[in-house]
Length: 268
Image (cartoon, rainbow, N blue to C red):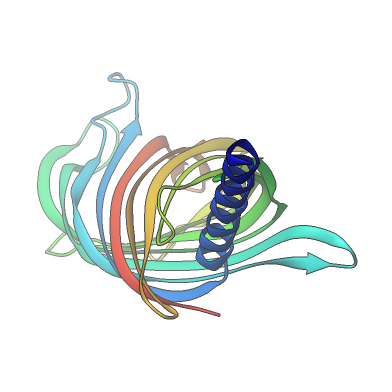
């Protein structure tokens, strides 16, 4: 009799653990939220020393992000995941480079009043790995933009832009009935990119296809009812191939973004 009671209690405990884990993850994946963000941007051109000095830029930019996600059963298929994310950052970052033309460059230090934004959409499906773990592979597509506005006497404005397409996966762990931790790697192609100079007489440059890698670690905590707090860190790296313009060429470059966010969400 005692053994039967113990077995029943154990099964009930396992069932309740499964329920809380499933509910915690599903609640975290059915949210709309807004967050304050901070992004450290590091940009570096790849220019042979024989051609001239390379431009570099670095600095922090405050911003915000709007996040929407949904996980539900559609047409008899469980845990279909969709999400839309928009982020925007803007701030003055330090520029170190040169002005002039080949053979006649002079060092220049300035400030870029930069604005960066991107929007991405994701579609995938979640798979339960354990009572409190879920893996959700997905496809992702989006768009990124950087408005580069150099200030000062040698100032100019350029717009960099590119499309994004690739794959990713969320690995989610429900540590408690209220806390979900998520690790997210993403691998995307940077496609259809280019640079538009707002400088008289210069044409736009078109870029080739390159890659973008991103890793994120986030936490979501249900405070009360449908109100959640969330936050996390992420790192993104991508390249631009550069391309010809009528006055020469836009050089290839690499960009690294280290970002953090903290926000509030409503789970529906």
